[in-house]
Figure 1 (spheres, rainbow, N blue to C red):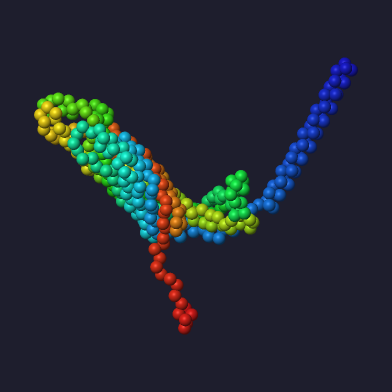
Figure 2 (spheres, rainbow, N blue to C red):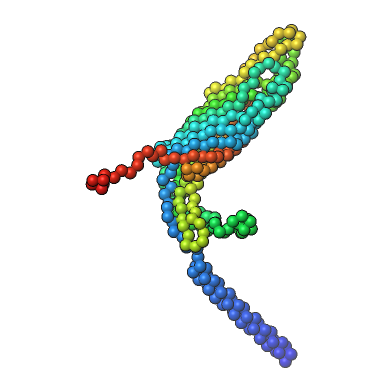
Amino acid sequence: MKGIFEANNFRYKIDMQLKNVFITVFFITFSVSAFSQDTDNSNALKYTVTYDDPYDLSKLFIHFQPIIGDISALNSIGGPGLEANYYYKNLLDFELSGRTSYTAAFDIANNAGSLNAFNDNALSTYYYGEIGGTYHIIDRTKASSSKILLYSKRLKGTEWAATVAKNAVIKNTVREIVGGRAGAMFYTTAVDLESTLAKQEMELFYANGTVIDEYLYTNVFAYSAYIGGSMSWFKNFAVTFESRWEPNGDDLLMTTYLDVLYSPGITIDDLLVNNSKTKQVETISLENIKRAPFGFRAGFKGKFNRSLGWGYGVETGLRPGVQKNGFFFTCKLSFPVFGTKLEQTVEAINTETGE
Protein backbone atom coordinates (compact mmCIF):
# COMPACT_ATOMS: atom_id res chain seq x y z
CA MET A 1 0.00 0.00 0.00
CA LYS A 2 2.83 2.33 0.90
CA GLY A 3 4.40 1.75 -2.54
CA ILE A 4 1.15 2.51 -4.29
CA PHE A 5 0.67 5.68 -2.24
CA GLU A 6 4.19 6.90 -3.08
CA ALA A 7 3.64 6.18 -6.80
CA ASN A 8 0.38 8.12 -6.82
CA ASN A 9 2.01 10.98 -4.94
CA PHE A 10 4.86 11.06 -7.44
CA ARG A 11 2.42 11.05 -10.37
CA TYR A 12 0.48 13.90 -8.73
CA LYS A 13 3.63 16.00 -8.39
CA ILE A 14 4.54 15.38 -12.04
CA ASP A 15 1.03 16.39 -13.20
CA MET A 16 1.19 19.60 -11.16
CA GLN A 17 4.60 20.48 -12.56
CA LEU A 18 3.40 19.89 -16.12
CA LYS A 19 0.34 22.03 -15.46
CA ASN A 20 2.51 24.84 -14.10
CA VAL A 21 4.80 24.63 -17.14
CA PHE A 22 1.77 24.75 -19.48
CA ILE A 23 0.30 27.80 -17.73
CA THR A 24 3.66 29.59 -17.78
CA VAL A 25 4.21 28.90 -21.51
CA PHE A 26 0.64 30.03 -22.27
CA PHE A 27 1.08 33.40 -20.53
CA ILE A 28 4.49 33.96 -22.08
CA THR A 29 3.09 33.23 -25.56
CA PHE A 30 0.09 35.50 -24.96
CA SER A 31 2.30 38.33 -23.71
CA VAL A 32 4.69 38.04 -26.66
CA SER A 33 1.74 37.98 -29.08
CA ALA A 34 0.20 41.07 -27.52
CA PHE A 35 3.52 42.87 -27.48
CA SER A 36 4.18 41.91 -31.09
CA GLN A 37 0.73 43.20 -32.08
CA ASP A 38 1.46 46.52 -30.42
CA THR A 39 4.84 46.64 -32.15
CA ASP A 40 3.29 45.84 -35.55
CA ASN A 41 0.70 48.58 -35.13
CA SER A 42 3.33 51.08 -34.12
CA ASN A 43 5.45 50.17 -37.15
CA ALA A 44 2.51 49.88 -39.57
CA LEU A 45 2.96 51.45 -42.99
CA LYS A 46 1.37 54.90 -42.97
CA TYR A 47 -0.24 56.24 -46.10
CA THR A 48 -2.50 59.03 -47.35
CA VAL A 49 -5.20 58.55 -49.99
CA THR A 50 -4.61 61.55 -52.23
CA TYR A 51 -7.34 60.69 -54.74
CA ASP A 52 -10.27 58.27 -54.83
CA ASP A 53 -13.00 58.89 -57.44
CA PRO A 54 -14.08 55.99 -59.69
CA TYR A 55 -16.44 58.34 -61.57
CA ASP A 56 -13.65 60.62 -62.77
CA LEU A 57 -12.73 58.58 -65.87
CA SER A 58 -11.70 59.17 -69.44
CA LYS A 59 -14.67 59.35 -71.77
CA LEU A 60 -13.01 57.85 -74.84
CA PHE A 61 -10.56 54.94 -75.11
CA ILE A 62 -8.87 53.93 -78.38
CA HIS A 63 -7.33 50.42 -78.36
CA PHE A 64 -4.68 49.32 -80.82
CA GLN A 65 -4.64 45.52 -80.64
CA PRO A 66 -1.46 44.05 -82.14
CA ILE A 67 -2.23 40.55 -80.89
CA ILE A 68 -5.59 38.81 -81.33
CA GLY A 69 -6.03 35.06 -81.44
CA ASP A 70 -9.36 33.58 -82.54
CA ILE A 71 -9.49 29.80 -82.31
CA SER A 72 -12.73 28.32 -83.58
CA ALA A 73 -14.14 25.15 -85.09
CA LEU A 74 -14.72 27.00 -88.37
CA ASN A 75 -11.33 28.66 -88.66
CA SER A 76 -8.41 29.88 -86.56
CA ILE A 77 -6.66 33.18 -87.13
CA GLY A 78 -4.06 35.48 -85.67
CA GLY A 79 -4.15 39.16 -86.43
CA PRO A 80 -4.49 42.80 -85.40
CA GLY A 81 -7.57 44.74 -84.37
CA LEU A 82 -8.89 48.12 -83.36
CA GLU A 83 -11.40 48.99 -80.62
CA ALA A 84 -13.02 52.14 -79.25
CA ASN A 85 -14.99 52.68 -76.02
CA TYR A 86 -17.05 55.79 -75.27
CA TYR A 87 -18.70 56.54 -71.90
CA TYR A 88 -21.73 58.84 -71.97
CA LYS A 89 -22.16 60.42 -68.54
CA ASN A 90 -22.98 57.68 -66.02
CA LEU A 91 -25.78 56.16 -68.10
CA LEU A 92 -24.35 54.44 -71.17
CA ASP A 93 -21.15 53.18 -72.71
CA PHE A 94 -20.60 52.23 -76.34
CA GLU A 95 -18.12 49.91 -78.05
CA LEU A 96 -16.94 49.55 -81.64
CA SER A 97 -14.37 46.95 -82.69
CA GLY A 98 -12.98 45.12 -85.70
CA ARG A 99 -10.22 42.68 -86.56
CA THR A 100 -8.68 40.66 -89.39
CA SER A 101 -5.71 38.33 -89.97
CA TYR A 102 -2.08 39.42 -90.37
CA THR A 103 -1.65 37.61 -93.69
CA ALA A 104 -3.10 34.55 -95.43
CA ALA A 105 -0.58 32.42 -93.51
CA PHE A 106 -2.33 33.41 -90.23
CA ASP A 107 -5.77 32.60 -91.67
CA ILE A 108 -5.64 28.82 -91.40
CA ALA A 109 -8.65 27.81 -93.50
CA ASN A 110 -7.91 30.42 -96.17
CA ASN A 111 -4.28 29.35 -96.42
CA ALA A 112 -5.13 25.62 -96.53
CA GLY A 113 -7.82 26.22 -99.14
CA SER A 114 -5.49 28.27 -101.33
CA LEU A 115 -3.03 25.37 -101.35
CA ASN A 116 -5.32 22.34 -101.43
CA ALA A 117 -8.87 23.26 -102.54
CA PHE A 118 -10.29 21.12 -105.35
CA ASN A 119 -13.13 23.57 -106.03
CA ASP A 120 -12.72 26.94 -107.78
CA ASN A 121 -14.26 29.32 -105.19
CA ALA A 122 -12.36 32.49 -104.36
CA LEU A 123 -11.84 32.31 -100.61
CA SER A 124 -12.59 35.25 -98.32
CA THR A 125 -10.13 36.90 -95.98
CA TYR A 126 -11.22 36.76 -92.35
CA TYR A 127 -13.02 39.88 -91.05
CA TYR A 128 -14.96 40.47 -87.85
CA GLY A 129 -16.79 43.62 -86.74
CA GLU A 130 -18.98 44.54 -83.76
CA ILE A 131 -20.90 47.52 -82.43
CA GLY A 132 -22.86 47.65 -79.18
CA GLY A 133 -23.76 49.50 -76.03
CA THR A 134 -24.41 48.97 -72.33
CA TYR A 135 -27.06 50.70 -70.23
CA HIS A 136 -26.17 51.17 -66.57
CA ILE A 137 -29.09 49.58 -64.72
CA ILE A 138 -27.33 49.90 -61.36
CA ASP A 139 -24.38 52.25 -60.87
CA ARG A 140 -23.19 52.50 -57.26
CA THR A 141 -20.09 52.73 -55.06
CA LYS A 142 -19.07 50.74 -52.01
CA ALA A 143 -16.08 50.36 -49.71
CA SER A 144 -13.35 48.07 -50.95
CA SER A 145 -9.65 47.33 -50.59
CA SER A 146 -6.78 46.68 -52.98
CA LYS A 147 -3.39 45.03 -52.62
CA ILE A 148 -0.76 47.53 -53.76
CA LEU A 149 2.79 46.58 -54.73
CA LEU A 150 5.41 48.55 -52.80
CA TYR A 151 8.21 49.84 -55.01
CA SER A 152 11.17 52.14 -54.47
CA LYS A 153 13.33 53.83 -57.10
CA ARG A 154 16.30 53.12 -54.88
CA LEU A 155 16.05 49.47 -55.89
CA LYS A 156 17.38 49.22 -59.42
CA GLY A 157 18.39 46.48 -61.81
CA THR A 158 19.57 43.28 -60.18
CA GLU A 159 18.90 44.71 -56.72
CA TRP A 160 15.16 44.96 -57.51
CA ALA A 161 15.17 41.55 -59.21
CA ALA A 162 16.68 39.98 -56.10
CA THR A 163 14.18 41.64 -53.76
CA VAL A 164 11.08 39.86 -52.50
CA ALA A 165 8.30 42.29 -53.43
CA LYS A 166 6.18 43.61 -50.59
CA ASN A 167 2.59 44.76 -50.78
CA ALA A 168 0.07 46.62 -48.67
CA VAL A 169 -3.73 46.41 -48.48
CA ILE A 170 -5.23 49.88 -49.07
CA LYS A 171 -8.85 50.79 -48.37
CA ASN A 172 -10.59 52.53 -51.28
CA THR A 173 -13.86 52.95 -53.18
CA VAL A 174 -15.04 50.64 -55.95
CA ARG A 175 -17.71 51.51 -58.49
CA GLU A 176 -20.02 48.63 -59.36
CA ILE A 177 -22.08 48.70 -62.54
CA VAL A 178 -24.78 46.19 -63.44
CA GLY A 179 -25.46 46.67 -67.14
CA GLY A 180 -27.81 45.55 -69.87
CA ARG A 181 -26.02 44.96 -73.18
CA ALA A 182 -27.20 44.87 -76.79
CA GLY A 183 -25.55 45.16 -80.18
CA ALA A 184 -24.76 43.60 -83.55
CA MET A 185 -21.82 41.86 -85.20
CA PHE A 186 -20.76 40.17 -88.43
CA TYR A 187 -18.00 37.90 -89.63
CA THR A 188 -16.82 36.42 -92.91
CA THR A 189 -14.37 33.55 -93.15
CA ALA A 190 -13.17 30.67 -95.29
CA VAL A 191 -14.09 27.24 -93.99
CA ASP A 192 -12.98 23.64 -94.51
CA LEU A 193 -16.19 22.16 -95.91
CA GLU A 194 -14.90 18.58 -95.82
CA SER A 195 -14.71 18.55 -92.02
CA THR A 196 -18.14 20.19 -91.81
CA LEU A 197 -19.67 17.47 -94.00
CA ALA A 198 -18.08 14.80 -91.82
CA LYS A 199 -19.47 16.34 -88.61
CA GLN A 200 -22.95 16.66 -90.11
CA GLU A 201 -22.73 13.18 -91.74
CA MET A 202 -23.53 14.51 -95.22
CA GLU A 203 -22.25 13.97 -98.76
CA LEU A 204 -22.21 16.12 -101.90
CA PHE A 205 -22.85 14.86 -105.42
CA TYR A 206 -22.20 15.90 -108.99
CA ALA A 207 -25.20 16.32 -111.26
CA ASN A 208 -24.69 12.73 -112.50
CA GLY A 209 -24.89 11.39 -108.94
CA THR A 210 -21.19 10.81 -108.34
CA VAL A 211 -19.99 11.62 -104.84
CA ILE A 212 -17.61 14.55 -104.57
CA ASP A 213 -14.80 13.23 -102.38
CA GLU A 214 -12.17 15.96 -102.59
CA TYR A 215 -10.67 18.82 -100.57
CA LEU A 216 -13.48 21.35 -100.48
CA TYR A 217 -13.41 24.91 -99.11
CA THR A 218 -16.00 27.66 -99.20
CA ASN A 219 -16.97 30.92 -97.45
CA VAL A 220 -19.36 31.67 -94.60
CA PHE A 221 -20.87 35.08 -93.93
CA ALA A 222 -23.10 35.74 -90.92
CA TYR A 223 -24.54 38.78 -89.19
CA SER A 224 -25.95 38.56 -85.68
CA ALA A 225 -27.55 40.47 -82.85
CA TYR A 226 -26.81 39.98 -79.18
CA ILE A 227 -28.42 40.82 -75.85
CA GLY A 228 -27.03 40.15 -72.41
CA GLY A 229 -25.80 41.47 -69.11
CA SER A 230 -22.55 42.65 -67.58
CA MET A 231 -20.94 43.39 -64.24
CA SER A 232 -18.18 45.99 -63.99
CA TRP A 233 -15.79 47.04 -61.23
CA PHE A 234 -14.06 50.41 -61.62
CA LYS A 235 -11.33 51.70 -59.30
CA ASN A 236 -9.50 54.99 -59.59
CA PHE A 237 -7.43 55.99 -56.57
CA ALA A 238 -3.89 57.07 -55.65
CA VAL A 239 -1.93 56.93 -52.39
CA THR A 240 1.33 58.31 -51.01
CA PHE A 241 3.40 56.71 -48.26
CA GLU A 242 5.22 58.25 -45.30
CA SER A 243 8.32 56.22 -46.11
CA ARG A 244 10.66 55.39 -48.96
CA TRP A 245 7.95 53.74 -51.09
CA GLU A 246 6.86 55.49 -54.28
CA PRO A 247 3.27 56.79 -54.70
CA ASN A 248 0.97 54.14 -56.12
CA GLY A 249 -2.69 53.32 -56.72
CA ASP A 250 -5.16 51.33 -58.79
CA ASP A 251 -7.13 52.44 -61.84
CA LEU A 252 -8.31 49.12 -63.26
CA LEU A 253 -11.63 49.09 -65.14
CA MET A 254 -12.78 45.46 -65.38
CA THR A 255 -15.96 44.03 -66.92
CA THR A 256 -17.42 40.53 -67.13
CA TYR A 257 -20.32 39.74 -69.45
CA LEU A 258 -22.65 37.03 -70.73
CA ASP A 259 -24.56 37.39 -74.04
CA VAL A 260 -27.11 35.41 -76.06
CA LEU A 261 -26.43 35.58 -79.83
CA TYR A 262 -28.92 35.27 -82.67
CA SER A 263 -28.12 35.28 -86.38
CA PRO A 264 -31.01 35.88 -88.80
CA GLY A 265 -28.65 35.72 -91.78
CA ILE A 266 -26.12 32.94 -92.43
CA THR A 267 -24.79 32.55 -95.97
CA ILE A 268 -22.66 29.63 -97.18
CA ASP A 269 -21.33 30.08 -100.72
CA ASP A 270 -22.27 27.30 -103.15
CA LEU A 271 -19.36 25.28 -104.52
CA LEU A 272 -17.91 25.85 -107.98
CA VAL A 273 -16.47 22.50 -109.02
CA ASN A 274 -14.80 21.51 -112.29
CA ASN A 275 -16.22 18.08 -113.20
CA SER A 276 -13.34 16.11 -114.68
CA LYS A 277 -15.74 13.86 -116.57
CA THR A 278 -17.95 16.48 -118.21
CA LYS A 279 -15.19 19.12 -118.37
CA GLN A 280 -17.69 21.68 -117.12
CA VAL A 281 -17.84 23.85 -114.00
CA GLU A 282 -20.81 22.82 -111.91
CA THR A 283 -22.47 24.80 -109.11
CA ILE A 284 -23.09 22.52 -106.14
CA SER A 285 -25.79 23.86 -103.81
CA LEU A 286 -25.03 23.95 -100.10
CA GLU A 287 -28.56 24.74 -98.98
CA ASN A 288 -28.71 21.47 -97.06
CA ILE A 289 -25.76 22.37 -94.84
CA LYS A 290 -27.28 22.84 -91.39
CA ARG A 291 -27.10 26.30 -89.87
CA ALA A 292 -27.01 27.24 -86.18
CA PRO A 293 -28.77 30.60 -85.67
CA PHE A 294 -28.34 30.73 -81.87
CA GLY A 295 -25.25 30.93 -79.73
CA PHE A 296 -23.82 32.49 -76.60
CA ARG A 297 -20.59 33.95 -75.25
CA ALA A 298 -19.04 34.73 -71.89
CA GLY A 299 -15.97 36.82 -71.27
CA PHE A 300 -14.09 39.43 -69.32
CA LYS A 301 -11.99 42.45 -70.29
CA GLY A 302 -9.94 45.09 -68.55
CA LYS A 303 -8.15 48.36 -69.17
CA PHE A 304 -6.65 51.18 -67.13
CA ASN A 305 -7.78 54.78 -66.72
CA ARG A 306 -4.64 56.37 -68.13
CA SER A 307 -3.70 58.63 -71.01
CA LEU A 308 -1.49 55.83 -72.29
CA GLY A 309 -2.07 52.30 -71.00
CA TRP A 310 -2.85 48.75 -72.02
CA GLY A 311 -5.76 46.31 -71.88
CA TYR A 312 -6.80 42.72 -72.37
CA GLY A 313 -9.85 40.58 -73.14
CA VAL A 314 -10.89 36.92 -73.26
CA GLU A 315 -14.17 35.39 -74.40
CA THR A 316 -15.50 31.98 -75.37
CA GLY A 317 -18.77 30.32 -76.35
CA LEU A 318 -20.72 29.13 -79.38
CA ARG A 319 -20.83 31.47 -82.37
CA PRO A 320 -23.87 31.35 -84.71
CA GLY A 321 -23.05 29.96 -88.15
CA VAL A 322 -22.53 26.37 -89.26
CA GLN A 323 -24.02 23.70 -87.04
CA LYS A 324 -21.50 21.69 -84.97
CA ASN A 325 -18.83 24.31 -85.75
CA GLY A 326 -19.79 27.04 -83.31
CA PHE A 327 -17.15 26.75 -80.57
CA PHE A 328 -14.68 29.64 -80.35
CA PHE A 329 -12.09 31.06 -77.97
CA THR A 330 -10.76 34.60 -78.46
CA CYS A 331 -8.03 36.46 -76.59
CA LYS A 332 -6.98 40.07 -77.19
CA LEU A 333 -4.08 42.23 -76.02
CA SER A 334 -4.47 45.99 -76.42
CA PHE A 335 -1.37 48.16 -76.51
CA PRO A 336 -1.28 51.05 -76.59
CA VAL A 337 -4.64 52.23 -75.26
CA PHE A 338 -5.19 55.99 -75.52
CA GLY A 339 -7.61 57.57 -73.05
CA THR A 340 -9.00 61.10 -73.10
CA LYS A 341 -11.69 63.06 -71.26
CA LEU A 342 -12.55 64.98 -74.46
CA GLU A 343 -12.43 68.23 -72.51
CA GLN A 344 -11.59 71.33 -74.53
CA THR A 345 -12.61 73.95 -71.95
CA VAL A 346 -9.82 75.72 -70.05
CA GLU A 347 -10.12 77.91 -66.99
CA ALA A 348 -10.43 81.65 -67.75
CA ILE A 349 -9.95 84.57 -65.31
CA ASN A 350 -11.05 88.13 -65.89
CA THR A 351 -8.01 90.32 -65.17
CA GLU A 352 -10.23 93.24 -64.15
CA THR A 353 -12.56 91.49 -61.73
CA GLY A 354 -10.39 88.49 -60.88
CA GLU A 355 -13.29 86.17 -61.52
